[in-house]
Image (tube, rainbow, N blue to C red; front, top):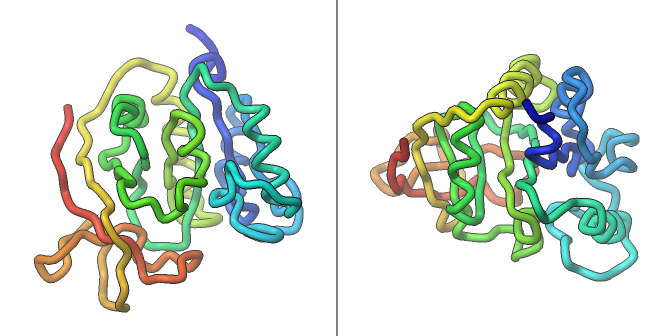
Length: 213
């Protein structure tokens, strides 16, 4: 069986306050690229600006220089698996920009994938420059997120696929409210990452698109 790093390129720590996936990758002895070493060392989400919003931009901030370096390091011939944690109360899920990557998401064993049609990163996230998926594995510093990351890594070693519900983000939530992620709100929209403290808005609006098997 080929090593996981031969099939996928793992990256973690694009945000320095998300160390849990890094610990799981180290524990599993999985090769990976560290996203933002300086922010991680300081325990901060970023130093100057959000690294996952500056890919493809020029400039001399810590994050823009790191984004440039990452695009030199990260290969283009295999899917990138970008691991994250969050502050929102939500079940774990995958994120894709290109729907053609949904089959990769199906190998994680998770039950939900979100297609980011509405690009909150203005076209400057890592997934705008590399084929791959992002995975929200759970809350910052939680044991559950750590355990799930190990389980996802184990699932990715095989070729089995799982059914997934596909959601599509189409806007941001403008008003605060009593939102439950992935539960229809007032027959209007399905909240995604509602309550995420890193966002300047209450969350994202999504619609259910389909189920894939």
